[in-house]
Image (tube, rainbow, N blue to C red; front, top):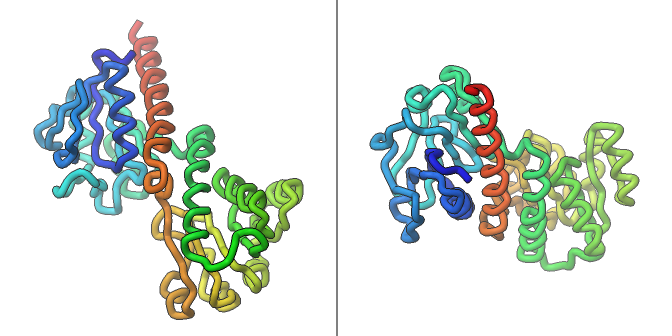
Length: 300
């Protein structure tokens, strides 16, 4: 149980509703910031403006999956008001306050360091990322079906990156009958691709590998599908970029060539917010419980 624990949930999408539900069931006291347009009420959760919350009593802050943008703005689907988190915000919290986010960026890392608070990135955890890859794959399949006029079965599919999402995507498209090639850099990843019975290639060979591609799925969060790569792609190619914003594709040049390129970094929150939210809720509840146990251990 989380009786007596005070948690500020700042912004987020439908996935956060499952997080709120789980934490209130565990008897935590929640302050919901950026949720004034949410019709549903949760026992033990209070909707409030950030400036009206006594942050000195907050044990944990839960940010959306993307954390903040480069200016500290937090995504608030259930609010029309802008919410910003800055160093001053964090400095008002107790020294033990832990901040939870899906991913981070330079801005968030900077204010965490300056305020000397602890940041936990949920998507750095293998369990969360692997579970989350399931709705990501289903969403990717949905997009591939919606935006092509040919079947996945028999299509030439290129997957870039063999991380936790890339591996799940490659296996799933292969099981649907696609001819899958997977690009990676590490020799052990290339070996794993071979073991999976997909066709491996080094990312240095990417321009050649995409010469006959029908669907290209990127999971690498840096510019990888450049103009020179796009120049070698057939015009009918569909690109689904799963990397976090701004993605790894030169979308301007793709549009110039007439190649459909879609940025889809938050598919779980779109196609299966309930399942994706439960994944986050389970991880967060356990992490917060573990954090409390550690703090109690230090004080005894």
